Structure formats: structure tokens, C-alpha cells
Length: 294
Image (cartoon, rainbow, N blue to C red; front, side, top):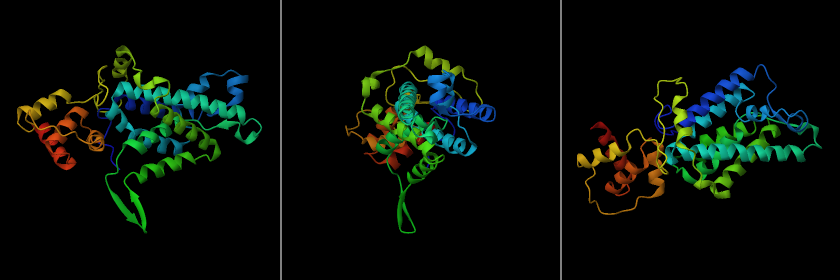
């Protein structure tokens, strides 16, 4: 399943997080015993392990599946913008971490559950909540009489990661789903929270380890954000009469907009193109691609 253009196009926050997680996993997995334990938090007061346990994977298979899912879920940053996505990341990781600590506290009677697996399980499985509700199915197919969709491969990768360490990874995964559900329900009014522009601009100074250019979002962009051709593309649509002004109003469907945004187009241009295309995603895609060519 494709999450849009290859690389981290329009997804600088995800790019920074993936690079940080990969580096920490490689550097620490062979020198430290990674994992979250009750003793480290409440007896030895090793609070630095809280940060490590939410970023670094403890094994190579978990690292591979985890980075793949993080890379795919960059689609959400393209949909809601880097600022909102940063809030989602911080909220999901903090809430899931608190739930994991709570789980460790109540599972002390079982010595086999005194450690939880390390890695950003909270963020990954929190992302499955908007993935389930907001990402439309674009194709369906049958394998051995089993009905599948293009989303099935993402679910299979998630299941592999969820049960990679059995009960030690199952609990962090469940905590992540709960955190994602709380975000979707707008717990504590989280949808209104935004980070300062200075914080977002600091991401642009993260070392560039790939050929993709780093871009930051504007503080007022709430829907489609960090576009590489936002207003420019809309103006191109209108200037070349690809999307003339005065087109009859026809509100495009949210699923169609989400499909175009997942392909890398910004929300504003996607809506304009869908109105011109009478909500036909294929025609709207051609309109946007033609606008890019001008």
C-alpha cells in the first residue's frame, strides 16, 4: 500500500522521528538492556530510561517493522500538518507511557511481566486509530477466497509488531491504541493545542541525512499542511484555467480529499481539484498533476 510520494515529502516531523528512533536503536540496543521496568522507575529512579524506552527498539525485527509503520504513517502529517502531528506524537507517547507505567504497577504479582518491550509502540499503535477511521480503502482483492484490501498489509505488519515479544509487546500496543482513541475523542481539548513556531522551525535544522529537503509548516495551517506547492498550486490551477474561478459549489467528500492528501497533494488544492472534477478522484489527480507540470 502506498502512502503517497516516496521519501519524507511534506513530512519533516516524521522524518526527524524516524531518524532519531533508528539511530538510538542501533547505538543502544547492543550496549544497554532496553525495556521499561518498575524497578528502574520507582526504585532506581532511572528516569532517562523512560525516554529511551519510548524511542529505541530492542531488536532488529522490531526495528524493521516499526520503522516501516512509522514511515507509512507519515500520511497523517501530510493530512493535518506538522504542528498538529507533533502534538499527536507527544500526546500519544506521554499517555501511552503513563498507561504502561500503570500496567507495570498492577502486574507486579506476575514476575514474568516485570518488563515491557522498548520502542515507540505507543505512537505506532495510536496511529492505527486514525488509520482505521480516516484512511479509505482504495482497492480490494481476493486471496484463497479471503477478502482483503490494500490496508490489510499495514494491519498485518502491525500484528507482527504487536506480538513480536508476545505479552511484553502486547501491553504497550494496547496502551497505544487507548492513547490514540483518547486523542480522537479530543480528551483534555488536545485538538486545540499547538506548538510555538520556534519549536517547529527548529525541526528544519535537524541534520539532513537524506536527499529530501526539510520543510516546516505554518502555524495557521490546520488541515493540509506543509505543502511544497500550496498556494502556488492553487494559483497555477486558476491561472492556466485548469481550475477556473467561479466553479459551482460541490463539497468534496472527506474520503476523496484524504486520498489525494495521502498522495502528497495539499488539502486546499485537493478540494479545488475535486470540485472541478465533480468529486472524481482520478480526474482530480490528473488536474493536480497537470498543474504541477505548468
